[in-house]
Length: 261
Ligand code: IPE
Ligand code: IPE
Ligand code: MG
Image (cartoon, rainbow, N blue to C red; front, top):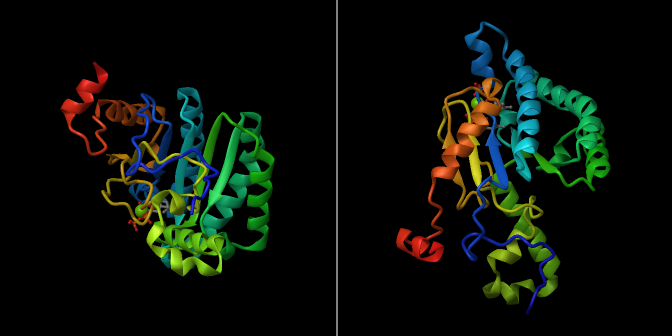
C-alpha cells in the first residue's frame, strides 16, 4: 500500500540528506542551570531564571545566522522526579516566559512549537501553549520548538500508536511493510528535518532521553559551559566545530571527494 507523506523531510538512514553549511536545525540540551547557581551560592531557581535569558540570546543569534529550526529541551519526562518546589518553579517560569516572550517572538517572525506530553500540565498552561502556537503558526523566519515533558521514548511510542491508528483496524496484517518514513511522519516533530547539530551544555556527555530517533546522524557537540553562560560566541564555536565535520552518512571519505569533484 502506498502512503503519501505530508512532509518533505526524509529519514537520514534511508535517504542522503543535503549537508548545509549553517546547520538548518540545531537541537540543544540546556543543562547546568543548577550548578551555575550553586557555584555562586545562589538557589537553583536563580540558575533557571538566568537560563531563560540565555534562551532569548540564543534565539536571536539563530535568527541572525539563518538557522531555520532551534529545538530546546526545557523539561524532560524524567524531570518530574525533582523536588516538588523546583518542578513548580519551572512551570511558573514557563508561564512567565510565554507571557513575556510570545508577542516579541511573533513580531520577529518566529514560529513557536511546544512538543511533549502536554496533558500533564495544568489547563492554564496548556491553553497558553495552544494560543502561542496558533498566533505564531504562520511565521517562517525560525521555528523554535520547546520540548516540555518530552522523552524520546515517549515520542517513538506515541508515533507507533498514531501510525497504527492511522492505518485502521487491519494494521496487524501490514506489520511487515512499516517503513521509517511512515513512522517518522507521526513523531512529535515531523514538521522539522532531523537536527544537523546537537549541543549539550553543562559538561555531561549523554542524551538523557532527548530526540532518540532524530539524532541518528546529528553532529554532537558537548561543552562544559553551563547553560546560563551560553551565548552567541559559544553558539558560533559549536557551529564552527560542526563545519569541520565530515558528514558521511555511511559512505567513505573517498566517495565524498569524488562527488565533490
Ligand atoms: C537544566 O539545568 C534545566 C532543566 C533540566 C530544567 P539543571 O537544572 O539540570 O542544572 P544542573 O544539571 O543541576 O546543574
Ligand atoms: C536534561 O537535563 C533535560 C533538560 C535539559 C530539560 P537533566 O539535568 O535532567 O539530565 P540528567 O538527568 O542529568 O541526565
Ligand atoms: Mg542537569
